Amino acid sequence: MARIRRERPVLLAAILSALAALAAGMNKWVVLGLLLIMIVTALFNEAPVIKDAPAEPLEIAPEAPPRRLPEVSSTLSGLDIPVMVLSDDASVLFQNRAAEKAFGEVVLGAHISARLRSPGVLDMVRETIATNAPNQIEHAERLPSERVYIVRSAPVEFAAEGARERYFILSFRDISEVRRIDRMRSDFVANASHELRTPLASLRGFIETIQGPAKNDLKAQARFLAIMFDQATRMSRLVDDLLSLSRLELKSHIAPDEKVDLVPLLGHVRDSLVPLAADVGVDINLHLPEGKVEVLGDRDELVQVFENLMENACKYGQEGKIVDVWLKNGTGNPVEVSIVDKGPGIPAEHVPRLTERFYRVSIEDSRSKKGTGLGLAIVKHILTRHRARLIVKSEVDKGTDFTVRF
Image 1 (spheres, one colour):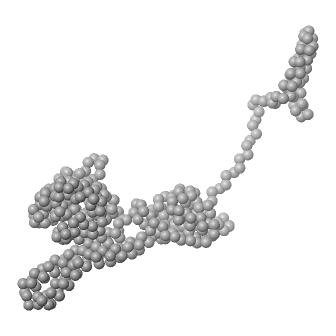
Image 2: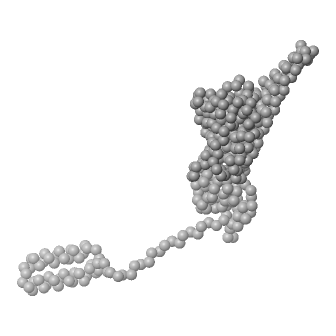
């Protein structure tokens, strides 16, 4: 009925049109058919649209205000360990300066998985939120340098706007140094015991000989004492290199930030090695650009790197009689220092392992040249700290190229 009432003006217009048609003399059956069609159309068509009718305002539900963290930021910001505060849906509400430095800045309100992808840490956070019980795990970061943390998640309640709100604190305690010390201690015991065994056995044998059969043989004693001195010197070098390697590992994650000019540094290293090069019949030629070539680094450590590489080139490439040192600093290109010898070269299968501790291409050749097997391992650790690379290219019977790329 409501629909018929709504269509009344249309029906009235149809009836009036039909009466006008009859008055004009049209056939009554034709007029009746047209009238029926108009009535059906009026009943089943949609209601007419009235233009310029004011639209009814839409009711929009007000957006829930963001959850606010109580005023604890000043306290947490003063901590020297990384700390994050999470909501009950694992969104990050706050991170202190130590957390920003360690993991980068997180957009507040983002889920914790946007920054930490470790399945172990994420599972621990979910478990703490579900059970309201504290948990902790050990978590390792591999890049940019290896770091190990004890990660702890714990619920905590703060007073916020007159009510008690539950939050979750995620803290990271850095135990990298402890792990490094433990690893270095075990490595030192294993490596030192292996490398010191031979010279110690030699010293003991000569001492027993001097005390026994050669007790009154002055010439034999003089010869044995010279050998014993060489063995003791070798042990001293070995211990010094192991201690140097240990010190480098302790600070490998700290990048140096001082500017070092490589032009005078390479000249200093060459001058210090001139006597050694003269003894083995090698000339060290420097090829340096004009002006300064500066990199960020520790001067003493870089001196140690290039002394080691130039000394190795003189000792193991002495057959070529020449060692060339090139310093390249092209515009827009990385700084490179290349030490090239014309010696016998290194077989390809040995090149990938050259920087391993105590790895030697030829053990007899290395010992005859008073090598400890740690030189290139020290170079590798120094360059890792400097965020630099050591690139080795070698061909048998053609020579070897050690390039340091900053």
